[in-house]
Image (cartoon, rainbow, N blue to C red; front, side):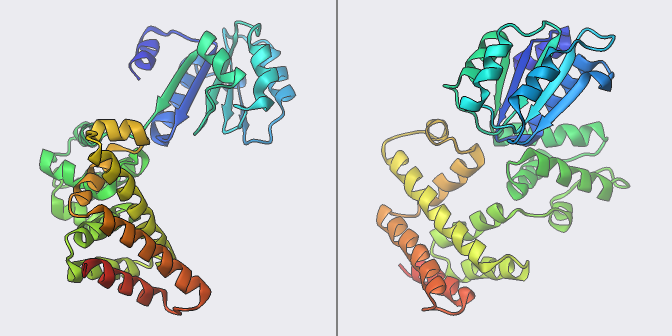
Length: 326
């Protein structure tokens, strides 16, 4: 992101941009900032193509026309799925397209071996936005509070991030809710976070797995019943428990090979939040425990779907009792 900020600071415009990765908040943030810089407030010179049904010929036609009383014309290509053979004609066109044309691609996943990716790398700028680490997220939240003249301690900012998770869009929304709630007091506390913020399902599952990992049956069941009270579908809960056991098996194996947290993040592509929480849980499980837990959770799903167990809640209760009793 450093190079992007330098380009914005120095008004440097490339002919092609690719913003990809799983962090939607940052993709949206830089899309807005570069659109403002390139279009200079003239919406007549901005054209957007969305979805994977766009025609390459239409994009080439739009990119071939000159800007209207401006230096640049911006073509935004959002989630078009052109990083495949379908995008090759566009890649060929880009090698000699007008200097006044700027193409901005917004994608989640891209194939780096495609002709389109290679030509963007050659003539433009590529930035992959991954999930931010806990330290960055805490700084991000604190900065928004500071801009709004609201105080929050480092401890409470950490508590907020650990409750909301590592999605910056969700975190920014929760911060805005807290700002509105605490505007009169100009200070946010942990009690305010508990009162106002919505804890994400993935974070709630981590809470439940924390207790399951230390064989605390009562607290594991308490967390499960909170999920049911929050109207979370039992099938979804069961699926996420199975998924977490699968993640723990992978991370336990990598820890056994001597990998550090950062090495596991690089090897798996998982965020710091997921890896850090999972490594803590792994220390309380043996490989045998994790294998048993994974197969037990998969079997619980199969038993319900096949009709052997008619009550999903009962299936999860039995799973919790089984795992926490070993």
